[in-house]
Image (cartoon, one colour):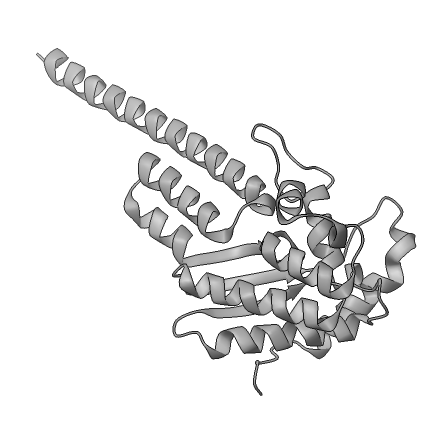
Length: 232
């Protein structure tokens, strides 16, 4: 007489198991798509990437996750988010080789990863990094990025870069950090909702000893300017 009740219980458990498996598969697929979009950040404008995140999350899960992705960006490379037009103009202003001899379209192509490919050596970062070897270049790039994030509707962003990659024209790491802070201050001055900060990155090379001192300088600067508030 207990067989029907037992069968009902087994059927419910089976349905719950199938539902859990579907949710796990959906989550795995979502994370795979989000990671793919994140990997393309270096050659995409922020707005395009954020809309991509929202498309994936809204399609595969509920709208709440999409809103979170659009509102915040916790891993944004400054040198991977530069407008090609800015690289074009700075390169001509500072006579930066080889970009000062290239057209805007050539620069745009050099900063774009072809569809279906990826950029493990970050070659698409090289033109903007070359354009960010002066204080005014770093300040402008940082300011423009902050202004663009505000226009895209973000409310919080963490902007990261490695100061030791911007010393080719005589700047010190502290000069670089101060220039980025100046750009952050200028950008935030016109923002109504966005809050943003800087993350200073140390770099891990094949031989850690080759840039140990540069990394230690970065650490000391991060400590010195910890909790530095633009405008203070």
